[in-house]
Length: 272
Image (cartoon, rainbow, N blue to C red; front, side, top):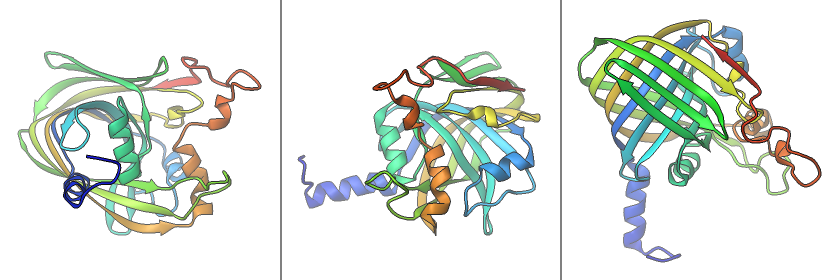
């Protein structure tokens, strides 16, 4: 192993990049409806809203063939690209640098570092994601129905984009990516759910109004992912969304004034 990889090392590393597996997964989810206008506002160019303004909040933990063991959570918004219907990854949080770097650089996932926890007592489950002292996602689910094991397919939309070196605009056009997941579920249960979304200046999850909670769910199983680039989006058009998928760097100015939102200071809380 070294800074310059051998052909054998390249082959081994690219195998992990091309065929990621996330196994022994445990995921707690709550599906809810928000307002259609909110979905239209949040979706970047290249994606369209569906007739169903569904949002999914998730907390989970995984093992893998590429980034070790990790915990995290995410918020997804249902969207469409052409004939493909899937989930736009609006926000994603992980507890370690390897899954953050892997997901951001490979799929374009908007990953940030945070702590997450998953608890259960019988059929009652709780999951939460906390960042700098603020709880951003909290899920409470009471499981009532066992749907049984089986295979489930999923699609995630993301965007790969990097700031221009001089700081103004993007370096290149953004790549709209599609990660397809084959989920082999060993446990698949659902029931009643509750979701509460917190927010900071860096994590404005309070933009998602919870209109109606549809269901809570808990699954265990293995996820196999394959990804591709679907389209390239004009960099200037995507810039507002690109800057929204990272922290607000201007709010972290500790040179000339206190940061706008010191760690632990919440902006607002919404829930349903």
